[in-house]
Image (cartoon, rainbow, N blue to C red; front, side, top):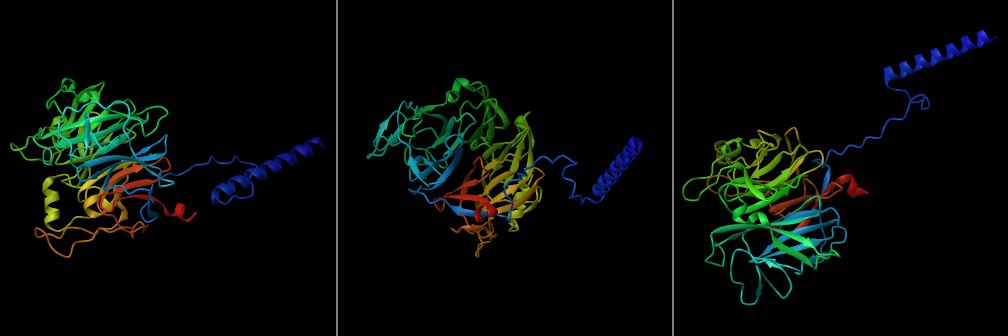
Amino acid sequence: MLETMQKQRQKRISVWVMLIFACLAVAACVSLPLLMPAPMAVFQTSGLQAGNVVVETLQLSEKIPEPSGLAFHPTRKTLFVTSRNSDQRWIYEVEPQTGKVTKWKSGGEVLQSSISRPCPQDLSQIGGRCGFKDEVFFLMDDFPTIFIDSKDQIYLALSYSNSGLFAPIPKEVGQIYQIKLIPPESYENPIIKKFPSTDPSRFKESPFVFARPRSIITNKNNIMYVVDESKQMIRKIDQGFVFNLAGSPYVEGTSKPTYQDGKGSEARFANPFGITLDSNENLYITDRRVGSIRKITPDGATTTFAGPHTLAIATERRNKGIFYRDGLANSAVFFDLTGITIDTENNLYVSDTGNQAIRKITPEGDVSTLAGQPSPMPTKIHATPLPYNSAFIDGPGSEARFHSPIGLALDDQGVLYVADRGNQAIRRIKPLAEQKK
């Protein structure tokens, strides 16, 4: 009897084994949940997808004039925004969920800038700042940018120019500021001081000054990378000293900006603007004048990641009226690239300011339009139609419209925020499915 039971057991096992293999062969096994372990849960986070996003405008408690710089604070869960209003440049903090806006107040130590310029008559001057009573703003040209590192340290990149009201001063001298929040970490009590590495004695290579530090970022080892726009260079600050990573100093009046891939000083940038860093320590820079995205490896080798790889190609396309095209990286066309950021899967997002659009570039180099839609102007300028489709419209990505988008910032949930400068608004891009919940 025991022998009979063993045979029956072996027969049952054989049947089950055959059934398992049959299920695996047709991939239709739905009735054996107890025979196989449950698969591990896998969450796909492929980033925002073209055709499946919606654009919203944050309803703010206070209007932010001409926002340009944008950064997400991972601990405070807020956005830090730099803006310009005439000759004033302010810093704001925004709570995305409530729309509450707070303009920064000064407190603590404000070190005097190396640049001395008078304040307007209705403003007082304390150290290196001008402001109404205790409100802080900075006097500088163009777009102030802000960056927050993984340790919640806030940096502000400023540049000064004599093209404005306050002359005579050196033509271009830039500064990088550190901003620390005084306990209990109130925005009303920041310490604002000049970053030590802007001291000329800290520069290991010429030029011994930041001409126009446009954008900054730090890596996990606290090495800072700076886009020095006017000098057409990417510079590195390591342990308090400044080194040249890529590009060669541009000297106004003696040479013209050029464009060239290469290693270290052999590389040339036409108009570098935004910067970001991927998980492999590769830098990506928007080269504004050419309309391309440059990639710099950790050893300083510069290549063109997306867009035209020569100035001649960029010029030829524009002469033919080609300002916009999605597709593969080497055939994609951008117009006036500014802001750039990256998600956890190394997808790049850029502000295509001239095309009034936000574009996405995958690690494989596929370029798509995430939101906004350019169209040619009805009239011709310089014998070519320039794209200009600015408006202020929320909605699905292809229906949304921007007016000079610049700064970009991703929060910890993968939502993309845009400093829509022309519309004087902060816009939010998130998955369409999330919006329907």
